[in-house]
Length: 144
Image (tube, rainbow, N blue to C red; front, side, top):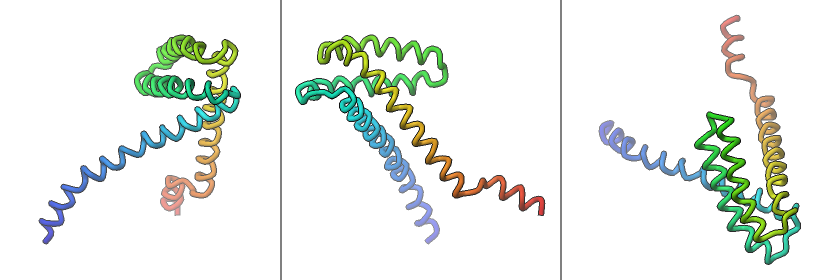
C-alpha cells in the first residue's frame, strides 16, 4: 500500500508544480490590464485611440517585463535597455497619439508602478504586524 501511495505521489508532483507555474502570467496579465486602464484614463483616450493603443501598449509591457527579468541583476544595463525600449515605442505611440500624450504614457506608467509598489509594501507591513516574526519566537523560546 505504501509503495502505491509513493508511486502516486511521485507521479502527481510534476503536475502540481506545472499548475502553480501558470499563476504568474495571470497575475502579470491583471497588472498589465490595470496599468493599461490607468494610463488610458489619465490620457483621456477616445475609443478609436484606445483600440489602436491597446495592442501597442501590450507589446511594450511584455517587452518591459522581459527586459526586467533579463537584466534585473545589472541595474545600469537595465536602465539603458528601458531607455532604448521607450525611445523605440515612443515613435509607435506617436503614430496613434499626439506628441504630448505619447510622452506622457511613460509618466503615467511610472506613476502607476510607484502606486502599485506602495500598495504592495503596505500590504506586506500589515501582514507583518498581524504575524510576529518566526525568528523572534524562536529567540524568545531559546531565552526562556
